[in-house]
Amino acid sequence: MTAPKEKPVTALDLETYRRRAEEFVGALDLEYYEHFSGRKPTCDTAAVYDRYPELFTKAAIDELEGIYQAAKDEEKRRLAYLLAFTVDGFMGEQTKHLGDEVANTEGAATITVDGESIGLRQAGVAQANEADGARRGRIQEARLAATGELLNPLLDRVWRRCHELALELGYPHYRELYSEVKGLDYGLLRAEMEGFLRATEGLYSRVMDRLSRERMGVPYSELAYADLPYLWRAPGFDDVFTRAGLVPTLRATLAGLQIDLDAQSNVHVDTEVRKLKSPRAFCAPVRVPGEIYLVVLPQGGQEDYAALLHEAGHTEHFAHVDAGLPFEYRHLGDNAVTEGFAFTFDHLVLNREWLARYLDFTDVDEYLRFANVNDLYFMRRYAAKLCYETELHLQTGSLDGMAALYSEFLSAATMIEVPEANYLVDVDDSFYCASYLRAWMLEGSFRMILQDRYGADWFVNPAAGDWLKGMWADGQHFPAERLLLKHGGGRLDAEPLKHHFETALGR
Ligand SMILES: [Zn+2]
Image (tube, rainbow, N blue to C red; front, side, top):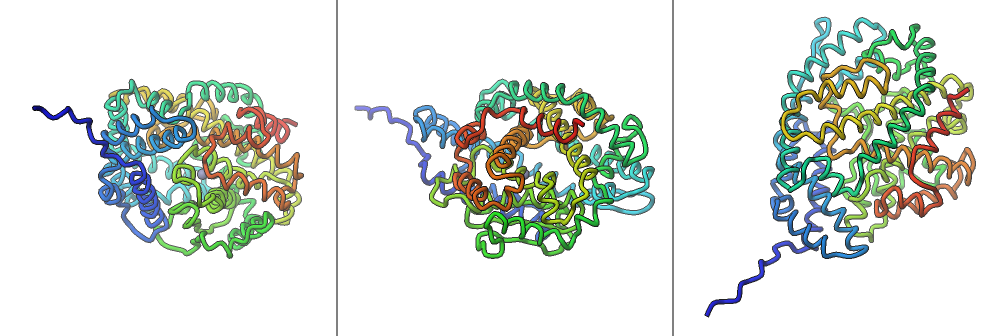
């Protein structure tokens, strides 16, 4: 007698999987926190992946896929988030050594300019602070050369491998895989962004030219890509955006929304100066909502203020998430949501009332025009990145031709010659640029709602704080489109942003 053919045993116990997944996310974020805060010179994410060998196998994806197909309603949404996490993890696991090599090569690389050695990660700051245009050009050349020699060969391997893995998972290309697991049509988003690029083309060209003439003394057509970091650094505003005032301004802004930063036992603000600390602020949500790091190396300047406010938006979002929600809604979900709250905070630097109240800055017309052009530039840049990435991630093999395509898209949108060499360092994992773009649109709507309901100085209205906290409590349970509808907004599109830009810059 033969035994009945056994049904394959489901090795995957969903509750155990979720618990281990949450532990992994925390461990990975802790590794990033320790490396980029300068506590740990090398980044060893491979060691973290190695502690969770069962999470990111092809078999785990197949089993989750099966459970997902059979699930219904709310459980299906949770599983969709979990499956997207597992696919990201699968890609990360398969490229973990290369990924660490990229981070560590970049961290250790130096460039030499006029006989002086500068760390590659610090070179962007040096270029932005350099008043001599010719020397800015030399720093830029050295950065591009280092990128081309040291990073691009590694990144080429990373992306070709990720593209190959999409095929192994049964999809025609990486774009289709991500479209499926994130439930997003990148072609539709691209069309929306192309519409935005066309609609703002004339405005952008006029305001960029005026800004370039005023601040750099030449028409925009004569400005070089190497000059842009200096244009955006705008040291002329440093007496308003002081280094000493940075963290106190954040503390006061949060107090206006009835949040006492110092009393939040789950928020750890790391302001310590360390030699290897990233010059850019960041947030590491190690446990949500229990253990969130807000890391900053105060330098001053308007970009530093916007960056800290942005990361504080993430921090407060994660810190206010309902601890009783499932892992998927606390940690995973639609990242456009957390980015939308981050943009809500960083766009305070465009708010006349906020500038007056917290920075005692009232003669703001010139600054506001500058800051709005800056915002429009970056949004157009991201729109072009999405157009490029929707092409890059159709590739299944050689990436030949992609550098030229990158330059073509980026140059057209920003109307300046963008060098080809950044065609891989300027790409985020898993179409993250789409999260930024959807967050920009979400913030455009939030800004309208906040101003209409609570006034232009909504940031000192406790009711506005309550409105935000109510949404924060949901974590990333609802995708940006649904969140907006639930809270009184309309369709997620670029219309509110077009209106903001035209109002701020159209005259
Ligand atoms: Zn962000």
